[in-house]
Length: 93
Image 1 (cartoon, rainbow, N blue to C red):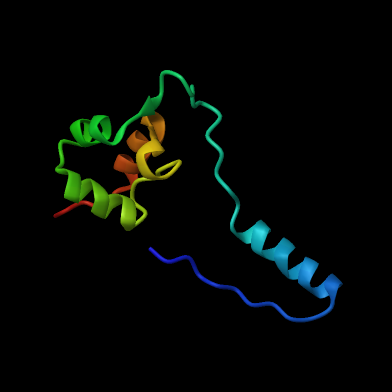
Image 2: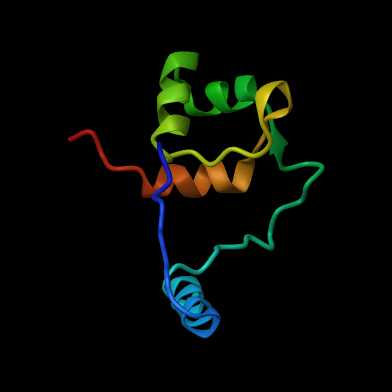
């Protein structure tokens, strides 16, 4: 999933104001309930938790349904975020 590109032109004050508005309208969600040691999962563990194939897991990640951290072989997930993502997934009905 490509991230949108935002182009802003103007004075430094106008740019700062525009950035502030973007931040205010798109707050970053921080999950303070994450235990980095026990909550961390691998791709294989997430695949088993969701009972899906690796290609399906990749589709979930690429579409932004499942949050992923890191990259390449060092990529990981948090169990609490996966559970929250499952709750927010659209139903197949």
